[in-house]
Image (cartoon, rainbow, N blue to C red; front, top):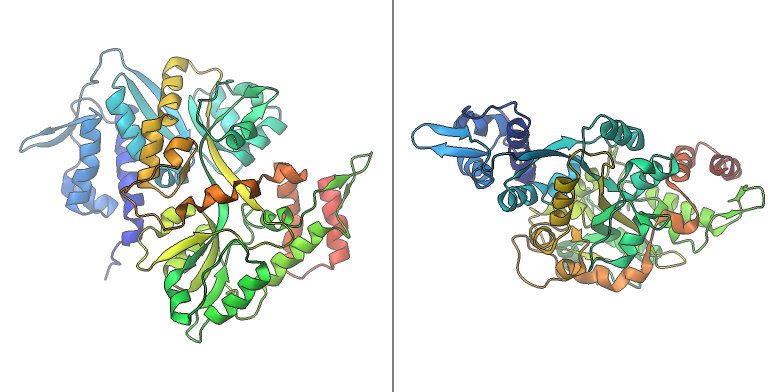
Length: 458
């Protein structure tokens, strides 16, 4: 018997259908006047109900990409404005759901019918090299870029491909400065999130436990996690510790930065940085607290949480979008801390191809996505935090019900850190990651790992 499609993947399937049809139309794969597959066929192909298919098609009608023909079906329409231009938007696939990109592009097409946006999925691996090749080949005019990939682009000397831009007013200043290179803004923040703790409120209530607060240490979390675990296989805490968006938290919380001597050699052995890594390993191997689960990526933590296999996870506002259909009450809190209450800050920005042949249209798209209307739409329909302060701090009832402590991030802004704040660039974090696999697996002595980390950072 075929497995019924999960409700938790509904938004992804709907986004995929709309994005694929839009791309086929804008790219010319589907010609003007050509009919789309029937609603029944689309429903089978994308595992969507008839009503969901119609909802997606209505978005394309609003964008003037298709038209409904009574008793016939849906067909590709002529451009609403003669002489329209097409620009290509490169995007991380996660952005489609996490920032409701489909809806934003649909609204953009309605507002600017003379500009058609073709979407191009970008790779996560070897991003710096890939985005240069995409720009050289004219495959992208605008693209999403996170802070880590931005560092890799700049550190590899590829920044000359990025068009300098003026940042819009009203954004959080700490976001803008992260994408500034030699007094030029080479990318503009789109959305952001600190790494936070998410917890199942029902589990806490059932055990009569107080919910997490900003004063929690990792020892407090461990003690509570042991109480939350039960004999039915539920564990207290989990996070994908191999993620470079998770384990650096423990370095940030050590209270120390990497120090270099006059020859540029780093010092790691005997520092508080190592203490942070020890705490990370201690949590992972804590009996009865942390499940022995062979995770493949960050999303597995949210999957376990959604199934109520774990009571607390280390996550981000971005990833909260994966648990929007949770059948229980959940909330967020600041991460517990080690020596200093700090957390890792993540951000996705928008960049422009300096050699784009459609710069005016590209700027129009960027201005729109960073404008109040689009940013407010993101705030109302996702858990992600917009870069525009006014939109992020909007108070009202949106389509997505946010946890009661959603605004908590505002109170912990002083704790936000990039890895560059402790003198580690993206290449060095990646080099450390390769060595730390041995440390986390207990396959190397600590002294040996220390020396290898210092060599890797040199």
